[in-house]
Image 1: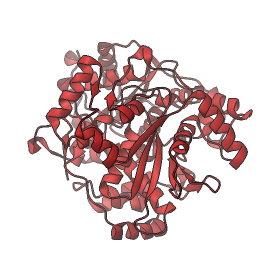
Image 2: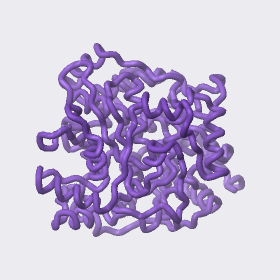
Image 3: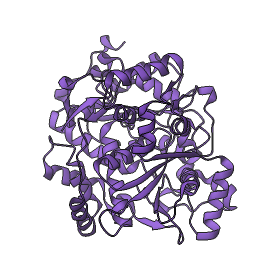
Image 4: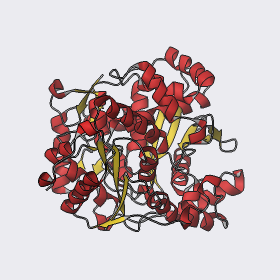
Length: 495
C-alpha cells in the first residue's frame, strides 16, 4: 500500500506507510491518502464479527489496519494493537461498547473510556505505539508539533509521555478550553511534554503548525511529526471503531446503519467516509456542528467558507470551535477523483478569496447522492435541552459535543434505521454545562479526582511563526531522549 498527497499530480512520489507515519503533512501542503481504499466484503465482515467476539477490539484493529500497512510485519501489528487497546487503559474490556438510548433508533458508541476521557484516545494510543516502534527501527527521534481545541492535546500527551525519542510541543488557544481540559494538559510535568498557550483561537494554532511544517528544511532538521488528524495513521485507527460499532449493532450481513458524528475538523467523520468507501454498510453519515457551522453550510449549499478568528465563536462544545477543517481536503480529493491539480485550485481559492463554491457541479450532486452525507447544527440552548432530556427520560448523561450529535441525529432520524451517535468525551470534562443542564455536577471518575487542584506548566506564546520556531528549537536542544546515533542539530543553524 502506497500513499499520495491530496495535491499530487501522479504516482511518482508515492510513499510507504512508515514514511508518511513520521512525515505527517505532505511536503506540498497536502494530506496523505492511500492510492486506493482496500475493499471489505460481506464474508470478511462476518469473519471479523467472530474475531471481535472471540479476541476483542485489539485483534480487529490489527486485522483492519493491516490492510493499509505492508511495511510492518503482521505479528508486530498485533503486538502494537494489543498494547494500545487494553482494559486497563480503556476502563472496559470491550474498549468500544455500544448501548441503545431507550427503545428508539439512537445508539451511543462509547469512545471515551480511554486515559483522557475523549474519543481521541482511540487513535492516539495506537499512534504512540506506532511512533515508538518505527523510531526505534530507524534509530531516530521525533518532535511532535500539534494544535488542539481541547481533547487532541491531552490524548496525544498521555499517549507520548515518557516515550523514547519523542518530544511534544502542543499549541492551545489561550482561555478557550474548559478548566478540566486545561488541567489535564498543563498538569503534566514530563520533560518531553511542552504545553503552549497561543493568543488566538484554535484555527490560529492550526495555521501556525501548518506554517512551520511548510518550511521543508526546518521540518526535516527538527524531525517534525504530527498527531493531529492531518496524520493519516490517526485517521486509519479511527476507521476501526466504525466497523466495531457496526458489528455490535447488527446481527447479520448487509444491514445498513447510520452514524451521527459531532465534528469540527472533519477527522472523525472522514474516518466514517473511508469506512463506507471500504464497503462497510453505512446508510448515512450525519455531520453535526455547533454554532461554528462551516461544514454544515458546505454540505447544504456547496459553499466552503472558513471564518476568521474574530468570527469563530466560543461555545459550550469548545472542541468544535473550528472554522478551518483541515481533514476536509481528504474528502474533496475523493470527491474530485484524486485530481491533485483541482484540489490545489480549490484550496488556493480559499486562501485568496476566502471560499470556494461547487454548487451546481456534478461533484455537488454526487456528494448529495453518492456519499451519504447529511448535516445539521446545534446551539447552546439545544445542548442544554438535549443533555437534560436524555438524563431525565433515559438516565443517560452525555457531554455537550455528543449532545450536538444527538440533536442533529434526531433531526434526520428515519423509521427502521439505527443511528449510532459517536460519543466525543465524558461529561466530567464539561462540568459547568452539565450542571446548567441537569442541576447537578457530573460524576468524576476516580482516576480524575483532584485533577484541577495541582500545579500547571504552560508556555505563553504570541500568534507568531518565528516565535514558534524558536520554541521548537529550544525544546529540541534541551531534551536528551533521542538515540545518540541520531545526533542533534547544531545551534548555529537554528534560525
